[in-house]
Length: 354
Image 1 (tube, rainbow, N blue to C red):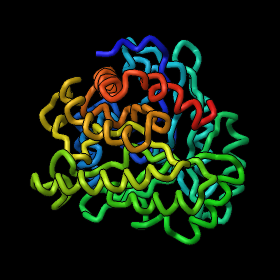
Image 2: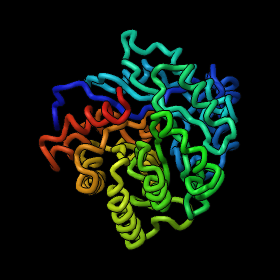
Image 3: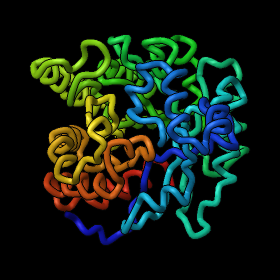
């Protein structure tokens, strides 16, 4: 286990409070928040099976996750600053998304917790008011760095879709609006399933002046076990997922404007079963699962375009944040003993201009 002798930057956390903000489960939480068993049953009843399979459990998405909660999760590790990434704010039409940026700015960061370095908000480049929405985000926070618009839609329709069309990043209206990011020197967080990496490659080539970061290594759904109806059912199927992912990651890495986040590798949609076994993955289990992915990404992107990010609390369903940092830092050192500060600090600072 590595003893990191420096404060890290966590380039991807989520903050929410279903009791006080627009949230998909807000009404249920207000009615049943004091009765966790009933709340879980109700959420499972009203939400789609594919969403439940993707998030694994419900308690970590229905409970508030605020700076003090993150501080509990980080354990003995020192964190210099964090980047909040949009978390499906429920008022997601038009200018309603500005509410999330204002909410994040209102939270008690810096006061005995952790420094808020940046905000990656959301906005839809297809929106006719996209440029105005970007300006409103900038007005709402001096820490506004860019946007994320999720596009994760899998070929297996029983895997949860996070966008309203399967190739959002190829949509003509999306591409037209996207031009405003480079014009305003804003970043873009891209999140797709690994089956859609070709869309990110095309986007990066069309906008070489826009800084793009691929979230969660491109989420190879089913890599570690069956999800959806048919994805990852057999050993050969999982091997094919890995091979396709490896090839597409290698091609994406040829785009010099693209970084990637070492994050989201413990999400249940990859096929993990830890939550069903009612336990958390150990450091060694995480290392064994993640090392082949981390080494391939570092080999393709180099050590200057890969950044650590926790994706907490989403990955909390499968392991602790301490175990994840322990395992990921060991994996980075195994690849290159001199790369720790780049991956766990410098790269995020450079990409987001923190």
